[in-house]
Length: 260
Image (tube, rainbow, N blue to C red; front, side, top):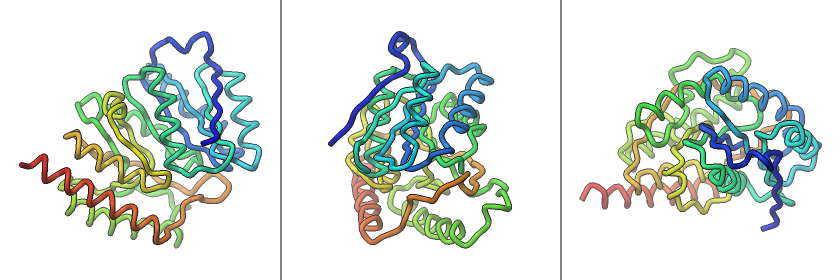
């Protein structure tokens, strides 16, 4: 795996942060800088010290330059660079490993396209402080931005809803949404995860791991919008469905062991 890392926090890396944010980035030029500013603004309003790991997953646009300028300007940002596109799951795993080295209390994972409003971080924080270990954003139960109501979002949400029914039956968790990329996790749980997926199926793998480790899992509703710019990197394909099903099977088997 070709990975390089750098940090704008060379002198302050030892300082403890409450929230470690992981942003996988692949060709998101123009989206990263405003999102980073919004995240830091929300965390400052909460009085929650934060750091952000920007994982450049083989971008071929100017995302790399945008990230390098951010870490040069702000010691709270660090970056991990994949020389080639290794996949969403690989980017998440790299970001989690880098951020856990900062010893945060908990971690936040978000998409870098601006589709998920940072103001929801306050709700995730409340659930973590209430004792949940993994908190997954739910696209259901929250008013939508009218601009996000188009066919592509509809079909993605329909497939996600059907997948959630299968996951609820397999894993025994009373959740409405299992696969939204916006999620929070306690650092001690993330440190015990054994994640291997390089694809978007890592989102289901996290849930299966939470079941295996007897963690408390919850949803919070979040507003889900159209991306700020650029094109979505998510595409359904047979391999992804097979990987999702594999993790459902793994989680169901772990659930049976826990129950007995």
